[in-house]
Structures are given as structure tokens and as C-alpha cells.
Image (cartoon, rainbow, N blue to C red; front, side):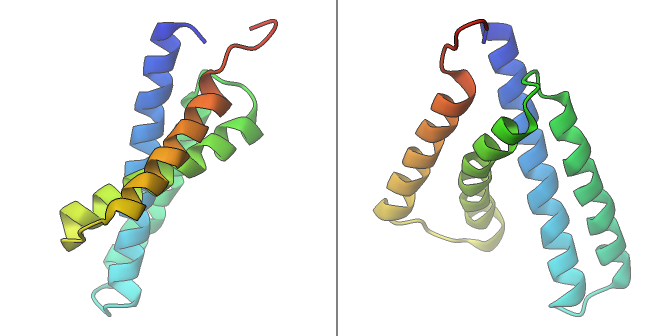
Length: 115
């Protein structure tokens, strides 16, 4: 994958992760914290945006995109937990995220024949 496409791909992954985690958090707040059904509805809309964002990936193989996204989600979830919930990851959390992101790089950006 050429450099501008890699940049686009990384940005789409970041936006999708933000939408998925924010949407799920809003639903969690509305249901588990008994906060507001409005938050649940907003969360559902944001989760719909998450699904749409993946269609903007330059990679055309849905399975590959979603497989790689799993690693992005893990890293973004830890960042969200740190920023929003005050979570402090330990070295094993950080090692795990590094392994996941290495997997993302191999799945999405390894040179392939015919690409």
C-alpha cells in the first residue's frame, strides 16, 4: 500500500475506533449508569457511524479490514480508559498493545503480490 493510502487507512482506523468506543461508552452510561435513554440513542447513532467509517478504508477486503481493526480497537480502548477513566496500564498492557499493533501493520500494510 502506498504512503498516502497508509495515512488514509490509519486516519480511518482512528476515526472508527473513536466512534465505536464513544458509542459503546454512551450506551454503557445510559444503561448501566441509568443515566439517560437519550445517551443510549446517541450511542446507537455513533455506533452506526462507526460501521460506515470502515467503508472509507482504501483496502477492499472487509475481512482483512475488520481483522486488523481488532488490534487498533485494543490500543484505542486502553487510551480511552486512560483519558476518560484514569486507568493506568502496566507493562503487560503496553506489551500486548504493541503486539496487536504489529499485527495490524502486518495484516494491512505488508507488501503483497499484485498490490
